[in-house]
Image 1: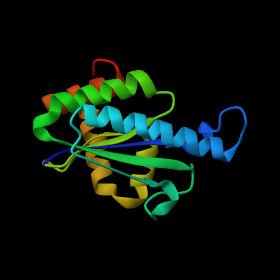
Image 2: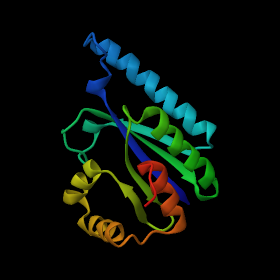
Image 3: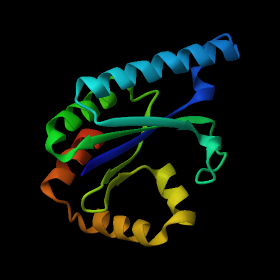
Length: 154
């Protein structure tokens, strides 16, 4: 199985100083291309994307491009490198929304925005995630993922 990393960036913030929507589109394409390049350099298994308004799952709080990267379990080190590069190089533009362990059906990380969405969608998983965070009951791999995202020892 593996891990699924969901991240997003706000399309409104990519306009630059001109406010030109064509510029937004070019900036979005460049940012997406850069993120996909980093992912595949780190042996990403699959990648797909959609706009926040393309599905009922998301609410129109932001106008975002959502990207989901999947890594196989045996590529944990590469996935960790990918997360580190994203956090180090793109943290002002890209939000890591969630990291999900597919094999164990375990939400390893969820952003506050993602938690807000879960409130309406999957309250059982949200409560399980909150409990794990409060009791700090992490596996070793969970610890490394959270350390990479939060940039501190937990």
